[in-house]
Length: 129
Image (cartoon, rainbow, N blue to C red; front, side, top):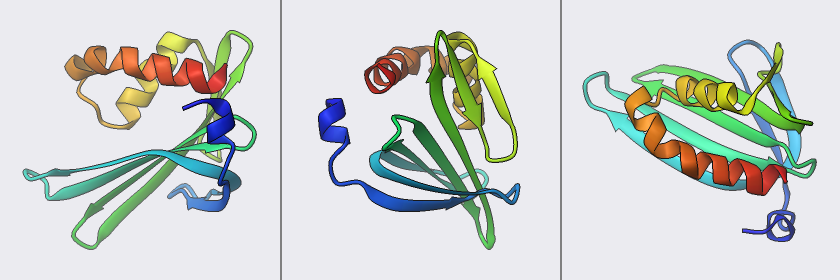
């Protein structure tokens, strides 16, 4: 998907984080997936949005019975570094540390992370330019 295609059909999105932060942005849902962990009874919903400012927003919602946790992370490029923030704190990371952070925050098994890294890198470069 090109940046031009990403820029169409933007909508207003509001996300909440359990740290008390709320994020309002204009963007488009780029990717969405869900998985269910039978051993814990937890349903995890992962969504990736692209904002009108060329930022990536990752939304992670875990639901187990009546318990729900909500997190979001905003990723943007800053030269050779990437900024990642959760509405309360912001870090600047190298691309390798960013990949490790995103995979860790999403609960992706480190063994599987190496398999997924090339696709994630390609998507990140395409979106961030």
